[in-house]
Image (cartoon, rainbow, N blue to C red; front, side, top):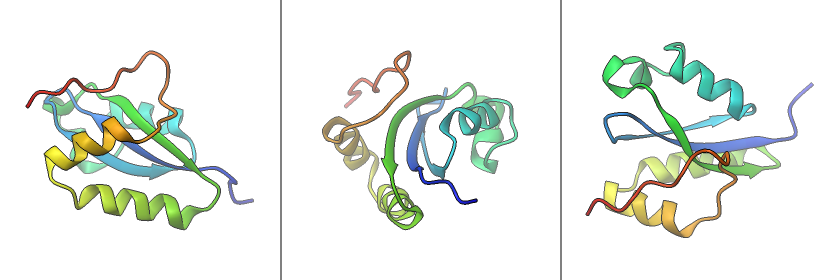
Length: 101
């Protein structure tokens, strides 16, 4: 049975880079990234640990994946603007990144 909740998420890595992805289970996916079993990009030790700083919920897979793709096309400055201006369902213990302009 397909999940009815689809998420576009953004992680802030320990090296201050961003990683964007798609999932149906944000808690599990964050654990995978921090355990070194997530995406190749997040497996590098210098990127761990990560924290989920942005989470958007969608009722269908396609719009969530489109949001992920669009975010990945932005410059770092534009990504910061996106994160500052878009509603997020972030876990309470994670904060948005500070503006390091």
